[in-house]
Length: 360
Image (cartoon, rainbow, N blue to C red; front, side):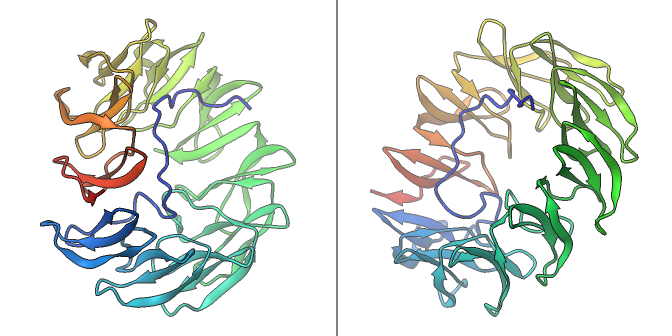
């Protein structure tokens, strides 16, 4: 399978075991003091003194915390609601969380009742439940369970993706197709690769070429591209003759394929790399909004985009100005007003004004 080449931004995942997309409460902010973590308010006054090896971010009003090598959950008052007994966790979502111990994954509820503790793996990306179902792996094959731990789609597939727009891409006998929430095959397994549906279209690969299908399995855009990304903000990045451009849902190029690499549009702006290896930020008409001596760049989230200059990362605003200076070794995009950054080998949080929530 031809792999997507367009995500050239060098963003590293933080070593916390929970999602960057879960909520950080503005009056309950993870704060690192040396090697220990606690929580503070906006004025950086401690609410919970640093005592944990690692912490997560709040979801369903519970926070994942790690102590003595094990994970558990506390509430907003710092009370241990679920003991630190698990090797890995996901954030709580709709009253359940994924947990891993004794070599198996399962799920727990807010009362720490363990359910479906028998799976080799549990697929967690930015969310645990997608349209009410969780991808799980048993005996080398994938299926889906619901939030009560019931296996509603048997683990019969070589690989699966979470549900999107009522369908899930699944791989069987080395070919990809789509099933509904009852496990019925809706689109036959005719593809070498299949992605999630976005804007009622999914990118698929056939014999080395990429195109887009609709929820009925009919071609919306025939397979003619060397590579393709998902539709976002009504356009998708695609490549022809090793050059990237952007098409609309009718398959017409709205921005000519002239770039070496191209990120999806976000907040009306996309980051691209030119044939001369220069980073540019463009608008939906392909016009350069701003340029600079950037080494790498990323997508806008909450009005800020990561960019690397002279081997260090900072954040640009939508005018192309660095509002957070390039002093960080690694960064992640902003979520809920905070970003995870690494400086001098240690991770911490910053807000959109660049305030740092740690003490070394």
